[in-house]
Image (tube, rainbow, N blue to C red; front, top):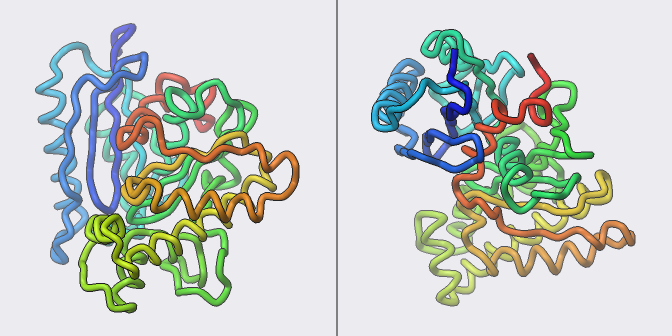
Length: 314
């Protein structure tokens, strides 16, 4: 049994990084570590698992202290939920990988709760971030992929399969680029980092990464700036639709691409205000994630600490 007041081991698994933290009951991160998600084509499922397990072992050794109260995880989707057999689009080494079962074997007797990484960002922002004190919000990740999580009436909305709030697959351009989901013109296909880079390179931009793209946009490169405007417009369209549907108070956006700041948020706001025309929809505010890059870890911890609001599967 975990000690009363014990921390939670929180894990954030994405296409760019594997991160973990020991999170205290109030949401403070006590110990943190991250490693790049291995992208070696020869990396298999067990190799990736060993990378994650080694990081967790090192982190807990550094933290010392009481045994964790539980394990909370945000992982890129899709996944079967709540059993969390995961097949992240941007992590090809894992297909139908039994993540929750493997963590239960590693941490016997502890609650292990796994949800989509964007949902964990939404939870973190609602619990301790930009949505604190609000009952109706959407949290979004704009990074290697685009995802979201939905809080209505103060509680996480899971939907039929745990995927409610997945704004990345709202169609924003029916004639747009193909998406990894098999559709066309999804928000994710346009606004995710690799999609932005590919589009910019097709227009003659010579860079290689999303970081390069944002840097060049700040320096005034016209193609890099156009790529950011394109992403911001797509986000504004999707958020306008989500706000009309769900009567949102706040949308909090995290992830690597959100670090572009005004380059992304200014065209987003312009588009949102053009298309969010109902009186109630005009009241929504769109802000960067207040918890920054740790929002998903704080939300993963809340799956254990605040289960009555954010976890409905046990």
